[in-house]
Image 1 (cartoon, rainbow, N blue to C red):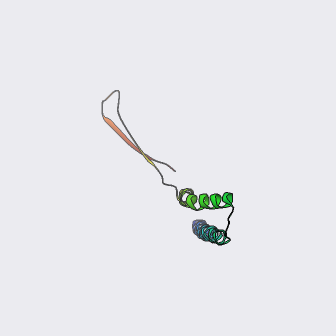
Image 2: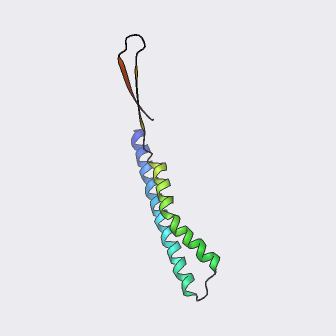
Image 3: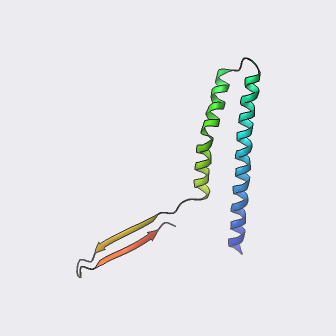
Length: 94
C-alpha cells in the first residue's frame, strides 16, 4: 500500500518538475525573442538569458540524477589467509 503511494507520489513530482522545466525553457526562449525585437536589447539581460538556455541540459541532467540515482555495485575479492580460497563478494549501494 505504502509502496504504491510512494511510487505515485514520485511519478507525480517527476511529471510536475518536467512540466515546470519545459515551461521555464519556453519562457526563457520567449524572453530572448522579445528582447531581440525591442531593437536595442540590454547586453546583461541577453547574456544572462543565453546562460540560462545553455545551462538547461545540465539542470535536467542533475535533476534526473536526483530523482533516479544509479546504484553502484562494488566487487571485492581476496584470499583467505588460512585456507587460501578465493572469497568474492558483491555489494550494492542502497
